[in-house]
Image 1: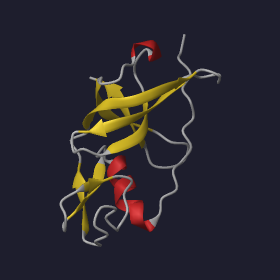
Image 2: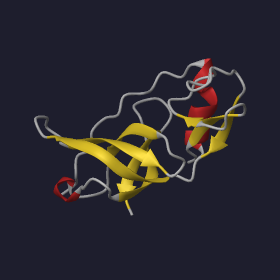
Image 3: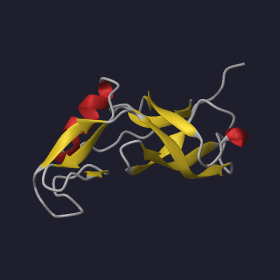
Length: 130
């Protein structure tokens, strides 16, 4: 018996986030770092949300983190888990937890990035337990 997978809508690729999505095609998770204040931030944007500098640069994230919080959506045909994951670099990102029994997900659980195909667009970063 095959497991049904949820269709992931294609993300909109803007010029500001093009590097992010091109890296996702290569299996890399990119985040922004401000060269002026040294802070990492996510979602990628050209202006630092901490000091408002425009001196931001792309950095490859380690792709590891831990679950900060999560919720399991069961009212759909294909249940899924949405979560905030705090990366080793200190930023949190909203994502899905995949490749596990949804009943075993826990706050503080260590996870690693995996990429899932979207419906006609670049792959989307999600996280799986380590």
